[in-house]
Length: 257
Image 1 (spheres, helix red, strand yellow):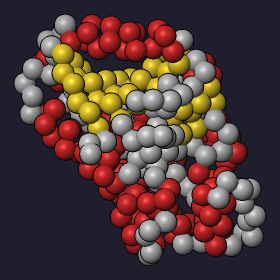
Image 2 (cartoon, rainbow, N blue to C red; image 1 turned 60 degrees about the horizontal axis):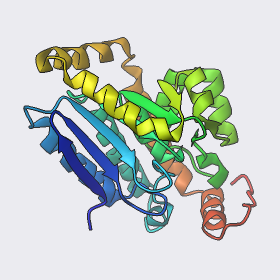
Image 3 (tube, rainbow, N blue to C red; image 1 turned 90 degrees about the vertical axis):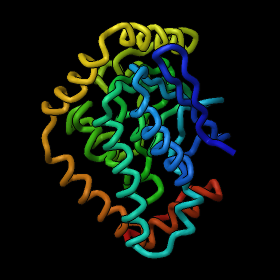
């Protein structure tokens, strides 16, 4: 069963995450996403992409149950690096990608949204990186992209506390372009994508190449360091306790080991 549906209308494509109930980012879903990036990049007509979630959430995080099946630190490091590679490709994509966030974009879900070029969110959506609540850390370059949008001080606060912010707050910090009511959200995204799709594709492609020059190259080095740390942290006692507590819906008891 496909976890990512694809629909194209004129020059705009819509990708919908269909992995209920939380639209968790599994390795299967990420593989499908990579395949869709391949096919979309080959489409000469496509000028804008919308990515959204079906049901209650955009994406409430990575698939923690799948993570627990891995054994070695190197396995976790590879998982992190693979996800980072897909999200980095999205960030460098030749076609603009608009994330439409309702319900929640947490953990891997927010990392996916941050890899998109434009983000719209419902005012009451929850956005955050709650990994430290489980004794682990972000693994898909969340520690590198979040400071770019909200600044270092707010990124430290959000990651170290694990507390999410609302879509309205996210707009005030620059994490999302605009916060809207849920009723306004999807029509606004379609209108925005349609506006972009009216432009010349060669001109769009040049802008997609030029704006990334404004970003520092240090994100590549930081992302590599994050993947290594992700692998190391997942082997800790506290990570095992945090994940077990999460799966059993209880509060973790960390021993700082």
